[in-house]
Length: 322
Image (cartoon, rainbow, N blue to C red):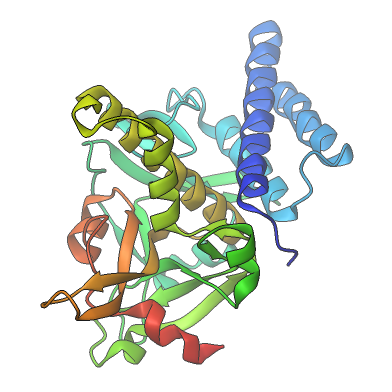
């Protein structure tokens, strides 16, 4: 895969969101005029085709994702009162109502989700905000959709695992573009409850990418410096701190959403190697630190919170897989 700088990755997300808004606006407008949902569906598909033909969006997986979201919307927009607003605390594909409760729905066309009994466990529960959380699985060939609770992968002994996005680098190339950069990312199937050591916790590397991204610590530092440059400590108000935290959260939401669209998998955490002082001040170790964790209550109970050190130092051990 061709390397792309961070700004291009985020621009890809923005282009995706623009196409999504236009296709949904077209669907709703056509339905309001004709009351014909199939006609509205077909006209909205034309928006995706325009973005593809004009090469505004060139990634086939993102295009498939757009068709998947449109198909889900077509199937459930009235029944679930769907909107494309961001779910609280997480960039889900749709907000709506299911069983008369507020719900956030992520849409996937990943074929692995079709055989949920063999590959995945269904995890009921809510987002940290209290919203119910669902996965909408779309079969584009049959224009059908099915709703599930959160689906997490099963590991070798049928314990529940997680898909984790790991930041890494292959050398000085990323360092030259960003003071501290990542030019290698991989999604691993992480099974911390299968027993054994760090190697046993990593069942497989699912996919590998070569985007050039700012390392999480550096991104956080840059966002903070943007807001506080030339300011004295006492001038940093609670409002400024909230803006900083909001921008940091938005950045990692975008990254999680971007790689979720590329892989079709639910990303449970984003991790990176961080240097931490352990014990005495000169005792420095590299540890796997979490910078984003899915807001589903079950995931955070099992994996932890952003900012925490993971039990297994994934990033330090996974190098042996390459």
